Image (cartoon, rainbow, N blue to C red):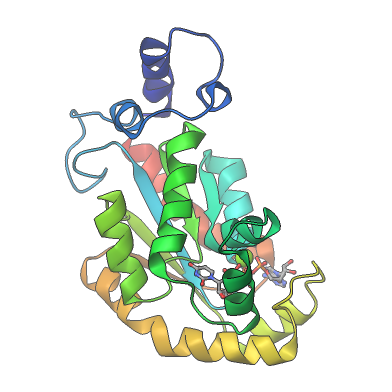
Length: 236
Ligand SMILES: Nc1ncnc2c1ncn2[C@@H]1O[C@H](COP(=O)(O)OP(=O)(O)OP(=O)(O)O)[C@@H](O)[C@H]1O
Ligand SMILES: O=c1ccn([C@@H]2O[C@H](COP(=O)(O)O)[C@@H](O)[C@H]2O)c(=O)[nH]1
Ligand SMILES: [Mg+2]
């Protein structure tokens, strides 16, 4: 599928330059780029050949770490919603102060803001295979994504990790994040506990959920993740 998409790009854009280097292109062109009516519904999104995996789990459960391994092994584009928000703050956008305040309090940013940032990245990166990390955090996020993007995830990974282990990992992360302190971690854990169940339940009922035991070494955990993506490659 990926090879086929790459050759389609040269039909749309008469240049040998990689698609991502050609700057922004229209939503219509991106949808065409990802379109492949030969694939049945259920495996790929119905109208587009997008392949979306939501990567969920509490703060410090290892989402970003495992996403890096999936990218390396399976060629996905990794979009961390939290990272997009942090970049937005760093760019001095007009929402910056509100976003910083929300993150410091461990609260959830309004859905429309986050979905628009994700949409912009999806449209401009030239890939059709996405890992969306740390989103959706609640039902409102989930519904907003499906409405604005017009697609559902194909798979959902959920990293299941005990709270004490998540706290330990976040406190030793040392990346200078404003929310990696014990007060904010407690708030983030509370928000996570109060909001993630309906999202997980929704995708579990749809048969899209892969619950991964997040205890073990990074490599051990990746060996639990690998079969989910290997099966998708096989189906392509
Ligand atoms: N299996 C593991 N065992 C021990 N430490 C780990 C493991 N996986 C990740 N870590 C470490 O734990 C910290 C948190 O991991 P990571 O950033 O991947 O979590 P996350 O789920 O993306 O967290 P957040 O939601 O806060 O962004 C990092 O310092 C990472 O190196
Ligand atoms: O969809 C999202 C993702 C993140 N946030 C806010 O950002 C921080 C950090 O997120 P990480 O996934 O841990 O990088 C999170 O606590 C939220 O405040 C959000 O609101 N919506
Ligand atoms: Mg992360």
